[in-house]
Amino acid sequence: MSVHEMVDDGRFSFEAFTRHPFFTEVNRWIVERVICPGRRKIVDLGCGPGAVTKLILERLGDARNAEVIGIDPSPSALDKARAAVHSKVVEFIEGSAEWVSRLVSSADAVVFLNAIHLVPDKAQVIAEIRKTLKKDGVFAFNTTFFNGAYVEGTGAFWRRWIVRAVQALRERGLDIQHSEHAVARQFLTPQEYSELCVQAGFAPPSVDLVRIEMPPESIRDIGRFSLFIEGALPGVPLEEGSKALEKGLERAMDETGVSSVPRNWLECVATAA
Ligand SMILES: C[S@@+](CC[C@H](N)C(=O)[O-])C[C@H]1O[C@@H](n2cnc3c(N)ncnc32)[C@H](O)[C@@H]1O
Image (tube, rainbow, N blue to C red; front, side, top):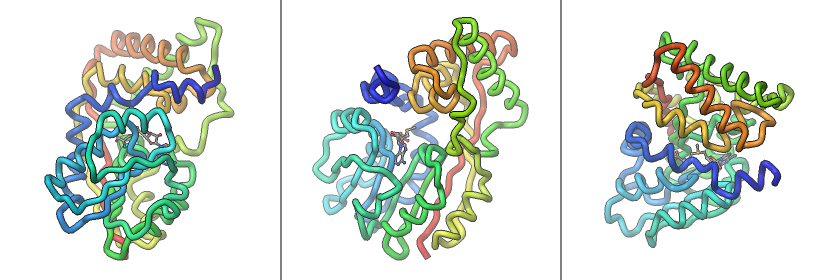
């Protein structure tokens, strides 16, 4: 089975991670700032299995004239979203941020949560999102894969996790493929994100950091998500990668005595100029 078939069979889904209360907190934080009754046409870009779509609907209450469009390139994530969200105002479409303006126009808000770090050409995608929006429309995104995510004193723990996972892989005769380290995995600073928004035609965005505490089970769950495994251990089959990340986590926690780990989420809201 190829890596892509495995991604699409849904076994390495993001869903388990979305059930942790802190994840709802970091997403609700931004959804509450951008979704309001005046914003009628809303795009949930990179909607995945639908956790953010649910928060958008919760925030809209009974706004019957709203239109929510969930877009994601993963058919298996969309299947999960369709099974989890039942609402007449929601439609799920297969698609990608790189050409979102061809799928939707004149949107009041584009919400792109926990996904922008996965995009290789962020300038192109932010310009595309600008094209999708009306003037005065808002673009909201968040991510914890940015330069500034590690709370002081925790960087060593995160690095040790991956080092120990690679060690566990090597013990099984496997290794990562360094050449596959993608540009998409580069961590941008909040300032760099801000500049990209301004270059794409947005007013200077509001930028906040929300600090949460990640319990060990949530770290284990992110280590079972296909896109995280591919980013952390490039070229490794998902089954082997997830096992190695679990073993690496156990070792890093034993060695450092760390269990729950604080981490920052970057929360950014930009208005189309
Ligand atoms: C970590 S999940 C986040 C899902 C959801 N937004 C949430 O916060 O619960 C990242 C999602 O981004 C999607 N994705 C990856 N590359 C994308 C792209 N270029 N355009 C749109 N979505 C993308 C993935 O398929 C995946 O479902």
